[in-house]
Length: 203
Length: 163
Image (cartoon, rainbow over all chains, first blue to last red; front, side, top):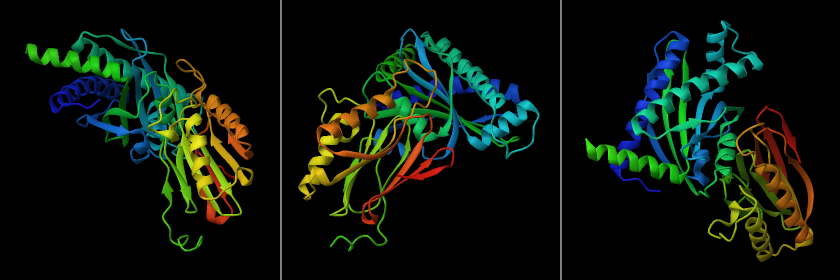
């Protein structure tokens, strides 16, 4: 769906609020400051996904959006492989950057993803009065494009373009760079936009 | 003049749902549950590459490369138009992985894609020479029709293979 600039602003605001809560939880877990970017909204034709996510190795913790809409799309905690190692090293008190990732790293990443995405969705639910719950998380440590395209393939509504809306969360002290990416089904997106528009009218 | 444009030629990047036909180098990156399929005719040194996302088009025909059931006939038709006979076409494919072990509806899209592609090729009497399909690892593929149809895979774990 094409968004007007008002709708796009509304979604951006929603992302802002969600990401601010997620950033706070990450900051608490790391015990240092986390900065967040202005949420970016991109409508991407699936054939051009490779321009945004390529062969780079990344950890992605994916959740299906559930709740009032049973299959609402996906929300993903994305972190590059190097940042993922820095993150789990910080959490586990390790320093070796060249080690291979093990089960400890995987559960740490699942846990961080879970906490951050839950904080994000709590905040948006409160704002919208529309509950989106995260499914249990699933982790993939692989080429970013391979993971993302597989999620798009299993969306229940047939799509030729996707609306990615992502907010970057950066911890300068530990050089950790991560993203929260939302990949809503078109009908979920329409519902969110409608709720945001109603809210802005009533202000 | 099959060699006139093989030097310094840019590699064509095949995105999701796209296909190309010719003798220039082609590449598709980050195959997860998607399938990277190539057909190659050694006598003419031409081939086709397609990045298939889903098994069934359910009647949609605006993006033939996206679905196995439209992609396979489309590239065969284009190769036939360039003078390739089905019996001289050789198929290779990679992808069809399951990136998440336990997740969501667990639709097994990768496996269904691979099954559909094999069945369609068989219908058209095209031999699948080699495949690197399944597992849970992402793959990128480079295809060089001008170089005997060389099909190279790079997997997410850093290993490489040639089919």
